[in-house]
Image 1 (tube, rainbow, N blue to C red):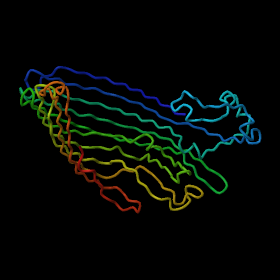
Image 2: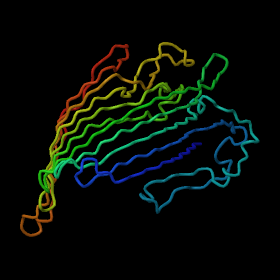
Image 3: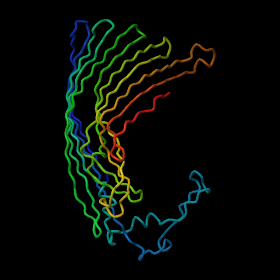
Image 4: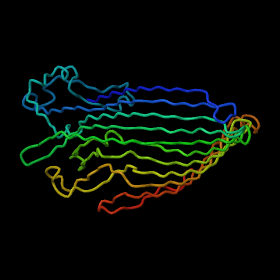
Length: 343
């Protein structure tokens, strides 16, 4: 059973403010609080009904084949227990056994509170040049609860695990826009952005999937991924429908998140778990991405007849990248990169 609560409280104020005497401009500021909780509380029981219902023909059943469903008579679903009979079973009256290894490692309760404030100014510096600049301050508080399940020869021991984390980020940004003409624009932006870890990655848990020989670990100590970005873009809009654009971009990324895969060295996670694949999210060190992009979109209205209703869209991206702080299974670091060409 999943549950989620999300409460947002915010206030924004915008006032006219011509800071450079060019006849236009605003200043905007505000604050926001976001309070989010996500949880999963499953409970699985296993029932042995073989003594009471040894075979399916001993219970009410019916043919679930539907001749009107998609493939019709070509697919025969066959006979299954009648849903009304299944719904009437009083399983609480039988000896159900709680299988905690099947559900408890996946249960969690995580709360994330974010307190933020910002101020920004949108100003004209000249008839052709304008700027949008601001800074955002965010403070994040995390509380997460999960379960650690330990297997012994005689028993299964579960323990609730709690972890807390908090961090503060200052995120300034500046956007410049220069109008060469009504149809031709040059843009430059320096921004700082933030990406928080997925909730499921923050759960302090150890989930053993015996069917796949896998162990899933959480990491409540994950830091958010931050990125400093530079973008330069030129755009020209045609008199009819269409645009041609090209630009450069650069990203400097810290604490990116990746999945570290290792092999369980022994049976510390439970009987016969030695050699299982162990997956855990970790923070890398630093990554950089540099790219060039080009796009062309045009309605072919200069062609005769019905051909004038066609459109053409082309795009091309070149990327070069590197990443440090990614560990191999043997613990050594490696450097990864992205595919260089995309169209």
